[in-house]
Image 1 (cartoon, rainbow, N blue to C red):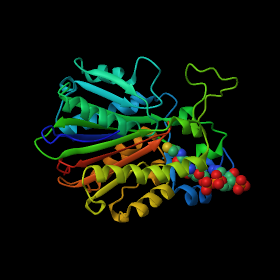
Image 2: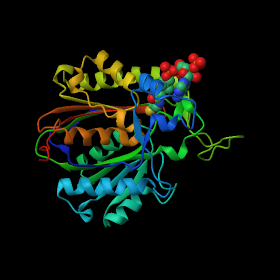
Image 3: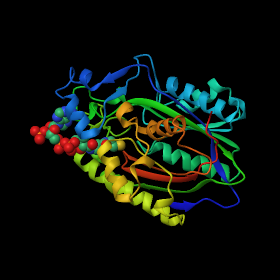
Length: 332
Ligand SMILES: CC(C)(COP(=O)(O)OP(=O)(O)OC[C@H]1O[C@@H](n2cnc3c(N)ncnc32)[C@H](O)[C@@H]1OP(=O)(O)O)[C@@H](O)C(=O)NCCC(=O)NCCS
């Protein structure tokens, strides 16, 4: 699907927050668990370290502080929120939803709250939904969280996946604004490629020996990723009548530095406009883009008036882009 925002119904990001677990796991530490090396991981992925949740930490333990920070940034209290969407593939449990737990903890008693699953693209899907609910007048203030504790579903003996991922969450508040804000969205899914990145045995389909760990065909996902990051972004820019040269800040899914570099070059976006934090966090799945946004804000790169392009991709296989004219002033 592809669509441009309505001129008379402007919605923007008015608050941002993030949280990663305390524990830093270096490439050297990983090489104690699987046959790998700091050199291999850096060369092939650009990742230096990632954060890994403590045994007692679940997604809501990261989502909640990220949400509180986003609310404070927007100058809002929990009860003022009437929609909460948590994008994740690792909720605390199948039900209750993590969004319902977050709503309760925030005292958002009037809020509709649900989890959304679209792999690493979850945050992009959730942003589009939040925008749609506000633009349609169904909700007034939305909290959109993207986060995952992927370390729980990794096979810690599989070097082809364990080196790539990390844990973390980010949150944004969406509100109506007089001008600027979201300009459009492009979302897509290709279930035929789903088995290239999947978690067999995690639902109602019975598998003989499911293991319940992430399984991935890295080369196929690499090809998919480099293709869709470019196609999705180009399609959305064209649909919104915006030239790539006008993009001030590009926030791609933080999966692998080589994938980001490839997409950036193909799109023709100068590297200084690209937000990269995969070196410090690895691929945090649904947390990736909001964590990168939060970093960019801290760095002073998100200024009112900046044109920000975000593109995610991941399991499903799925992809999605959003274009936004940033309206929020940079925090001091
Ligand atoms: C996973 C990925 C980094 C592998 O890089 P690659 O350059 O394609 O490497 P290959 O899979 O071809 O493997 C090359 C060699 O390194 C080995 N290898 C794989 N993982 C390794 C690791 N962690 N450490 C050391 N060696 C490793 C392989 O066994 C292979 O050895 P061989 O040549 O003896 O068979 C890359 O394919 C990738 O990033 N894919 C996308 C994954 C992704 O982003 N998934 C999430 C999407 S949301």
